[in-house]
Image (cartoon, rainbow, N blue to C red; front, side, top):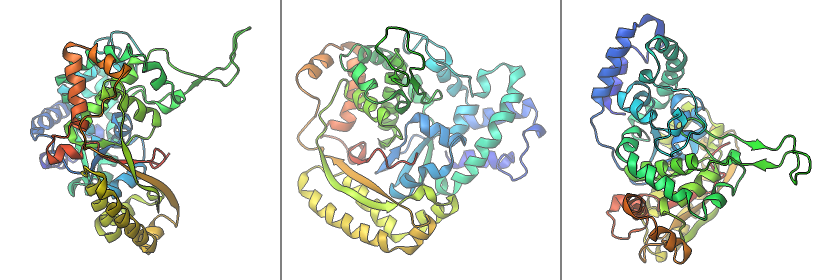
Length: 422
């Protein structure tokens, strides 16, 4: 979100303490929407050691459906956290066009089949008679969250990034790639590796757990046995969309659900990948930042020398391309861990609560890491636009001939799946 957008929100009083949607007419909202749309002119900035949480959790946080403390750990540990821009999603006609293509809107365009869908959350995708109700229901919560996030947006620790233009630009390739991935022999295994609740099914559908309640007579299933959605393509499409967002922002993927991680890796590689990883710190004790109040997180991000050093180490880890650097980084992490333990202000902010993190790095040297054998054979069958799109995503991660900024994309920095607070 650029400064022009904050200026528009401030000009119209949307971020004031006495904001009330009812004082604005529909003509006012249209004028604001058109002004905001015109203000989105800056290209997406790529920043070394950025992360994103996935479009589903990122949208929930940005719109205020989850507390900001849920992203406290990545905010203080990484240079930048990329979240979907909620103002763009709500007010932009471009975002409305993207919504109309998504499986969760009821469209069959991107996956070729109707799926679970949910109500729209865009000013332009509801009838005129329903816009007042939508504004009253949606905007106050979103704007309260933006006020909370604003201090860290303004210093670059959080970036609010529109993702819908990425979808519109790559819609045909996303459609073709989704169909091809769905025919892979690995699609079912990857999307049923965990219980269904561990997979987000769409940007707004989120995660839905299902299990057997009353088994039919004579079946081999028991009450409480986990079940999965038969239609896998929405999850595969979301994995591809998350990968495209990673590529556009040069941000590593840090999802809150392990199923999203599995699908993302599968989608990004065009099949399955061998990812050589090296542990930098298998167990690093860090404060449980989600236990802190948000103003404390803002202060820690600005003032903690120990956390600044940890961010510097993670930034360096995101760009290493040979194993010889790992012992040095391990030593630096040991020193940083000692400083974290000694920083009384951190532990006071989180009420002395600790959690463990595993920090891994993917080594980029030695060429591409697309697996040989059946996986390579699968990629070879893709053909046309799908293989071009998938290999373009893969090269963002595995081609050793990248620019320094592109090297940062996905090379770090696997924090353990349980780092993100539940």
